[in-house]
Image (tube, rainbow, N blue to C red; front, side, top):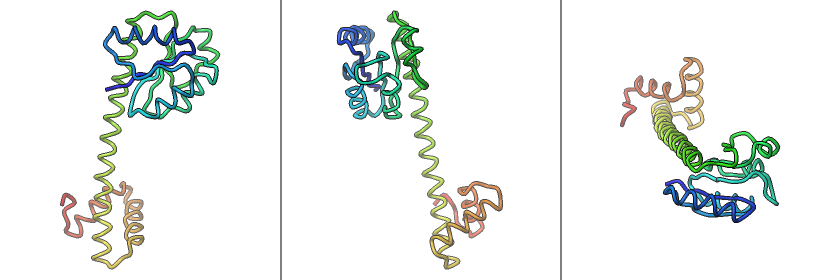
Length: 185
């Protein structure tokens, strides 16, 4: 579930956007009227989207984005003129005045992109874990068979990897195979 934070300097604007979202089936986690509160709220979340204006009394949308956790995307609603002054990189933008269906379509697109990114990050994390296990297993095998220290075993895998032009996990798997170990145990 994606959490949505709505942040605008004027509470009336924030509540209007919140109403538009809730009528479309979205749940709003929090409504904020300054940048510091938006950042603090975002830090509590595992993932989410911050929908905001461009300029607050304490900071601009660019400054907010620089301080947001990586798992929080940002969508700014503003006039084109204001966006050109305060907008920034890695921030989605919709020009005001907005139509409800444009906002909803943009949010759905942002959620899909974030979900794909999270799944990819999770797969990469699992792959890295598997690769690290193979390297550790090869390191232990080298330490036992060749009476090497942990550091010497690691350097041996590293040097063999560089000499062969393969990555360390592939090299570790080959070493395990050469030593008669299965890298799947």
